[in-house]
Length: 465
Image 1 (cartoon, rainbow, N blue to C red):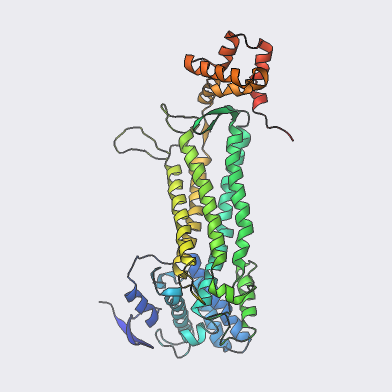
Image 2: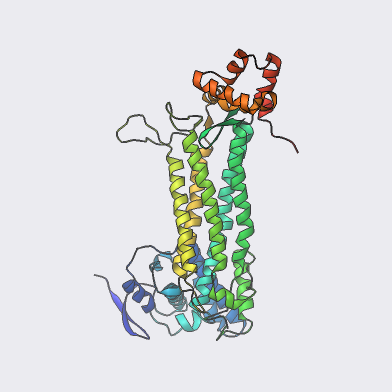
């Protein structure tokens, strides 16, 4: 049978599990919000630890916090940042507005751990108090918002951008490998003029590059953090130099260029930077979803589909059809992209829910942003390793499609005109012949000119400016 200790907050006594590092306000949140079982992720908890570490250091240097107490808080906050106490962060994502419960969860865990380091007992707050010491010069309103910026920036810089780059490099290598393979282009899901397989794959690589560069530029919006703005932006109860020092220490700890915002009140009231970055993640998801869809289409078959590409067989595809292999990695990637796009819609609606001096929807914004970044990064790595790297070209099938492509008649326009070329295409389709056969049989061009007109190397060569 679990043992409890009696803790106290402004509403009265609360029973807390005896060995828990959290305190009464966290316990109330556990009881009030038994909603989803979802928790804010590792990167967010790390960010909370960094904030509390930076705050304690700044307050100590400014003479607001005793050196011994500050040292214990900083060490405990470092442990939180490292992941040592993740199991003690137990508040549901769907919790009190603004994330007060989440902030107090961090304050209580760090306070009790610091208390323990100073020779006190867990549950006693006489040496280190969650509000008076760990939360000194802070509010939920600035720290949770800042934690989203820190966690989001670190996740993009260290996880998502490198994952995009790895997939991009794989596609670039396939582009170079397949630049001499001529294939049928397709528009409107119908045959179009020929192109090179390397050009098609290079288009996918270019889309990843576009969104990678957009994220590299856009992540800078998250570097503005209103640490020290406190409840509404005025910095009440904080030393005048606190915000500058604490922000500098966050930058030092993370190695990223975090700085104070141009307008503290704008920062506290709104989450525009997060909305902007979420939109970039949504854009990436849209592009990657298109890539996954195209690979499913181009690898369809193997005998009754397009079948121009071969995806690596990574697992059996059916519980009833023997030998069936499905494009599971591309399917997975599609589902991830749909989820990330949906996350952005949640964020947009939550950001629009700001009222007066604060947006209280921060916990759901934090969860959806960080989940989208995490699943996109992890998904891209899995997709790259188990699909893109092993992607193969079915040259025999690609060549057969090119030869039967009636859109080749487009290359005849400069020689016989659009109207005659259209008749050639229609005749070739109706009679099951190639464009070359029809032109030759109707004596529309001599053999040398026909070879020139239908030279696939010339047709598919990119036009130089």
